[in-house]
Image 1 (cartoon, one colour):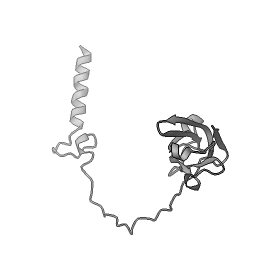
Image 2 (cartoon, helix red, strand yellow):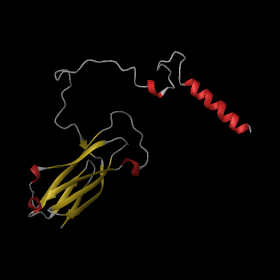
Image 3 (cartoon, one colour):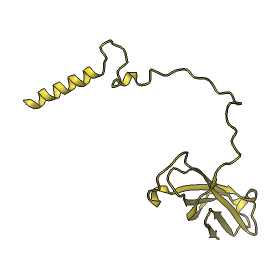
Amino acid sequence: MKTPITIALLSAFLLASCGNGGGSFGSGLNPFGWFKSSRKGKTLESRDLPSLPEDARGLVERIVTLKVDRAPGGAIIRATGLPPTQGWWDGELKPMNGEQPMEGALVYRFVIAPPPGFEPVSTPRSRMVVVARFVSDKKLEGVRRIIVQGARNQMVSRR
């Protein structure tokens, strides 16, 4: 008998805390009022925005794995990189030399953007970033090696 009374009283207190007595959405506990206090702000003109460099990303610290899988019409290059901390993002395999083979090799740089603030180091598995790129059969003609470069190492996949 005590359990239903306790539940009823708790429910009444929670329901009462959602309102502020005046019928408005002013209570911090009322979910209907959480986004009602937004204000209009100034619209940024393009001249107000900071200019960004063409590519501010740097090389990933270390390449952990490199795998090339056949796909219809070409191949998919997949690389896993290990940055120094968590929070790194916007990874990409950027082609060198316009994706033209150099001495029978396609060379890519694993670039990645740093986190906006301090991030914890944590475990290597939690920091890994995977990127992939499709390369057509036409671009793979005459290619014997695919090289992916990082800051501290590079990995090679051979045919």
